[in-house]
Image: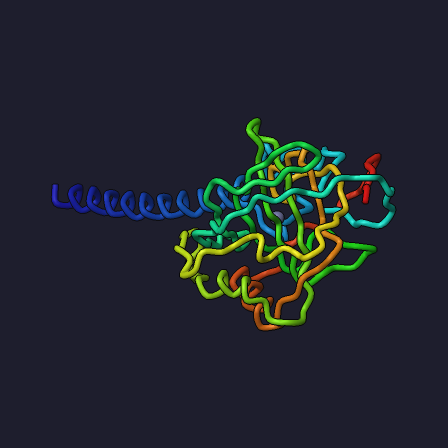
Length: 259
Ligand SMILES: [Zn+2]
């Protein structure tokens, strides 16, 4: 009797241990699964070359023919209209979402491009630039993401060069939080139009999101004129992101880049 009780308790203890161990391994496995199937990144097995295989919904990352970013080189001159801006101060909070530093914009700021109106939703930063011009990367690129009433996206891309301190960009930097995924109210609301170059001439092409799910049908306009930020400012954004967050340039295929 005593013996069987002992045997029972050993079995129970073993079961408990095994139970614990397997529970732990399940947690680890789940994390791994999460990593493998949902969590995309910029390095190794979750990096851009593998995005199309990480999740069914990301198939455009490998199947798409109009993917972004691109190298802007062979361009066609066309007569095009200026982008009209109706931007108001509205960058209210900043977040490092694990992929990019992003400023969320309050509703009410719009652009009109070729008679089509889009509302500014957010802008975010890539270090180094994603798009290149004649093969050249810039140390930083900002994407101003706009949406129309039907959900179509238009992204204005702005290249930063290292140079003069950028006072408007400082509003983003001073509010950065080390916490991933936490929206931090900005100490001073950002004004997207104060980040824009004085000359807003642009290259235009059709493209995609540069992050999974790499959806296409995105109107891209890349400003020809760059703006500057100090080396310290660019470093501050890069440091917050912690690793390069640029997808490599994608084949242009049958697309036309106009200017
Ligand atoms: Zn972007």
